[in-house]
Image (cartoon, rainbow, N blue to C red; front, side, top):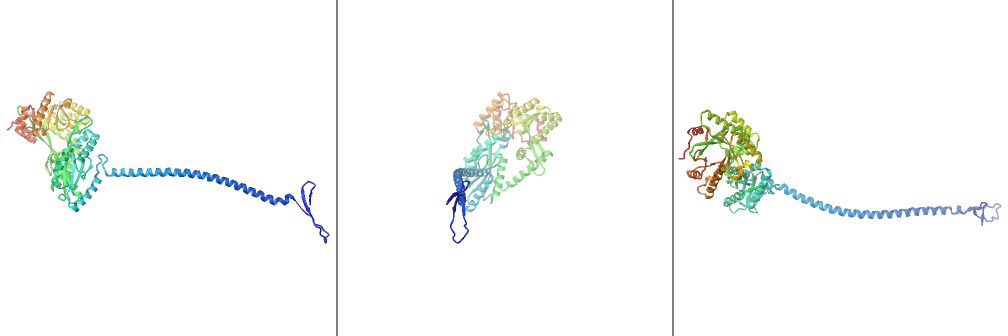
Length: 533
């Protein structure tokens, strides 16, 4: 039964009669009390459901976000893989380039020394196994250091690149040419049908490399190769021996006059050892006056009177005897001692002039050869002036001989030095004219008083129409420019007659006299005349 409390709350009441009991128990509960556990469970369920809903929504959100990020990450991974592949390709390319750089000379693109050694040793093993022809050539450029010092390293580099191209063009595809360093090259000839072909190959190389080279401003440069040849197994059983012997043969080519080739023979090893010993002792030779001057007379072709001498240095070696300039002047140039050597020659010439004057002999000009390095030194004129003053020698009895190459680098500075020397009263002559770069139209702008025609044009003057016409033209043009002309290397009466007929002023050569010591030069000077026989 349902009833209400006085406050209006609903309650349920029920009872049962208990017949045998005098006491009646009535139990009642409110609706809230009865439903409270259910309401609490329902509230808990709703809370749980809400939380689960939130979790599901959040999970869905995070899943969606994760899928988005995954897509982005996947895209980034694809891009990264592409970049990695590109990087790997680039690294492989750089590795290839690094290998080429390590294996080849950076300037000429030819194999370098290391690569050449590996290739040559491999070919040598093949040649040893099959008894084939194996030829090693060493090649060095004549006058390259002079070109490099006077025109600069940029021109020298271009010249080396040109030589590399010419060498490749001179050889077969199967041959190997490498740059060992500086102006030294090595050539490996493989699979030759016969070593009898070597002269033809060497001549072709010399002809190709010796072609004139023009600078950007149009100046012509002439360099030539000296070649040494070593043949396996005749000249060595291993690579090192062949290299050593080819190198010795190359230096023999330089000693013989350059622009040639030489086969190795066993006597050349002593030549290489000798060269090394000379190089080691040269500074001491200059310091301790082991050097001496010899003098070659210059003869006036109108009356055959001696009008001067060219001073030529010799080395009186305590063990080797008299050593000629071809054996040590290149060493002085390579080591930088040429300046000290030139100073010694200038001082000795002034001393010799003073001695002849003291004997009452007529003063004639002594010609001193000056290197390009000396002429680039601003103090040279003041140094010459000091020597003249110290020995009380007039300036007009000293003549400075220069070569055409000294005019090619720092021309303005060099000309300034020459003009200062001219102002002292020193005469200036241009030596070996025709062998290098200059033309008379170029020379006329310089303080040059004397032209010396190179002996290569005098040698065949009677047999070569070209040389004869050229010499006659030089003489005529030089006279028109107010210059005197001296012919070098006169050795025969026929040459002398031609030169005299062409109007040459002076001559110098073995026909009149070889270079002689100071005492013999004094006797020639006393006599005064060197008439032709």
